[in-house]
Image 1: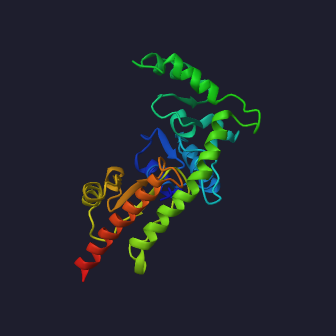
Image 2: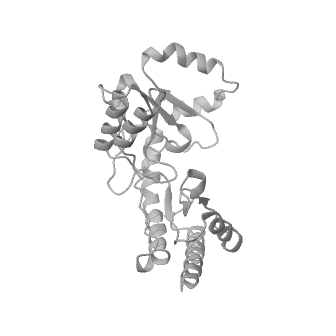
Length: 264
């Protein structure tokens, strides 16, 4: 689930100078993969060597688990002149639906970026901007912004739900070594590998129709044979969470059982 610097270099050479930018998303969606700092540095250096801009999508910057750490390449002075960093209030600051985000970019792009903004037909409302500014304000207790403090609390509560989801995956799909998934360390998703021969779109339809469980097919991100399970809106310890996890267990169990019966 992680990019290869050598592959980036090969692609740049194959395109004969036509590539203009490398987009890196960490933590990733739908995979939840967190690019380790050492690898991220190597990717940025490879992009710079081929004259590429680096567009760093950091929407899930605060959603990391299992000891993983988020690294923003623009924070490195040697990289800052080559990196545009994208952020959103929707994910990190719990403001989904308010449509507020921002970009950090080198000063030499100021004129070009302002031209782009001038051509946008819609903009964030004044109210949304006021709320976003409040989320970025200092929090007296933690020293972090008020929004970041909220995110840290939320991430802490999500750890148990995330663990429960992966436990269900292990109990149903991974029994006997079948369909071993790569566990991402970030974002709000479990990107789960289905048993061989199971169509992800068929699995999505069955989970929805029979078990009222909504997931996304991996094929929409070029990864057929996988589904993305979101644990963002599950309130830990609630009856709703227990019901949702039970439905997920039943649905994935049914898919695994049908797959094993078919291969016998």
